[in-house]
Image 1 (cartoon, helix red, strand yellow):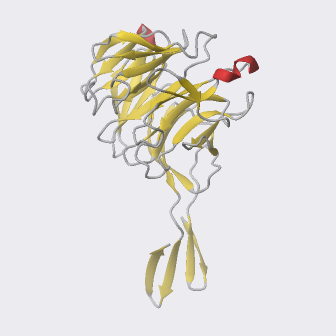
Image 2 (tube, helix red, strand yellow):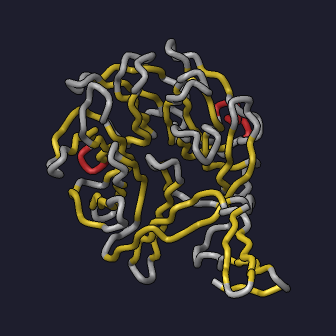
Image 3 (cartoon, one colour):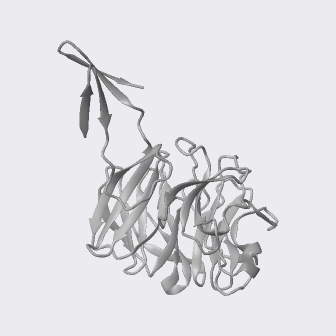
Length: 319
């Protein structure tokens, strides 16, 4: 931190973090929350009811836990886990659930890190639970094998929820999440991506109602790979964050999407993120060269701090 004295006033400048993240909205700041080694490539992540983060590592199968103090530890080891969600507050109980690609399953991970088979899923993509109950309170999971969405009850019984977007050579659905605060009508939203113009009608961000009817949620995002809702509304207005493209062959960005379909570009590409119980956005980034995974916390930039010198007394005022 450095300060430059201008008469009686001092403006504090906060140095930018050493992260390869392009920030388009400068009202947000990034800080290092945790880091650990021997991780292999990192993948999706989630948070439990106590605010602990769980990060998947696809190559070595590790599920790492980062507690609220930023301390990391190995929680469990799966078989090429792809996505993860928390069952707390639902009929699925206080356990983690993962799409376990190594044995073509959805698996349950209990509080001791023990893994148990729940149901069959080949090339699983996203995994989310209907915690509100409008969709029957079940687990919903996508597959890039047959490009459809299944639902599972607590016994692991599987039924097809919708065949959308149908088998078209692995274009999705890649990401999915339920709105739980009502801003998006407590509906299921799904991200899909198809590179070919003739398939553009099924590529982007879509809402799916309880009957499986699909509607485009935004015309601004034409390819999408992941999405997550700001469930607290504390820092991101209760909106949706979407990783995707605004042109078919363009770069990936992170967009903030409101309930009217308006997309605002927030950040450059980042693959793995989730919202915490504190309302902050958490990002994990893997450095192949150093074999280090770093977890970042994103919150709004603090307002300007002025320090007023009155004689020998320094008063700090936050505006």
